[in-house]
Image (cartoon, rainbow, N blue to C red; front, side, top):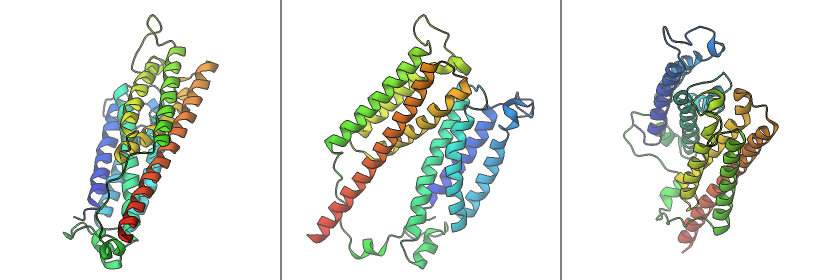
Length: 296
């Protein structure tokens, strides 16, 4: 199995499992509360269709179909929006169901990035290497562009983020966490306030958990790790979607709470853009280091 394509196929199969789990947690099973009962407008059942379609596309990708890989890139972009959206706008859901929806979106983001990488790699090598890349039965090593073969150089150790970039990421993250906490306080989730729960309006306290998550991820990302930066980028994008659409799902009517929701969405978007810029900067520094070694 080609090394570059294997993770994509495995992640696609994982996504199929998560789609099925989404349906089960939403109550879509014989005798369940959402089994063609009109709950969630009978849209929760579509998770099983997604699982079937995704598995079929995974099979085609595993057989080496480049068109199927391109189709899966489009599906990933769709699922990246659809999964967080349906976690909130169809009505109150239990916390495990919401978590699985968001986890599926995160897996779809990884699939999207990995599939685009494989597709770009396939077009940077020759036809023979492309056949090897898209053929899962091949035992040959993953092909690399000719430039890498002709001029092998040791990969330099990437430095950390510039201090200005690290400070920017840290400050934006702190602002986002502060807005999330303020949203929870304004919504009445404080000692002696409203009841805390796992569904509907009572789940508003989850903003405190969101704040802890984004601060924890950012604490690693400011040191310049590519994986941590990508995870922070994915987290910020999820918060953009969740903050923008959760007022509709939770029927938020308080003007101040609405302002805080939208402010958090904009701050999360700024954080996502800052993460993307930092990732590009790390790649540019790495390529510059390789060029310097080649010149030497």
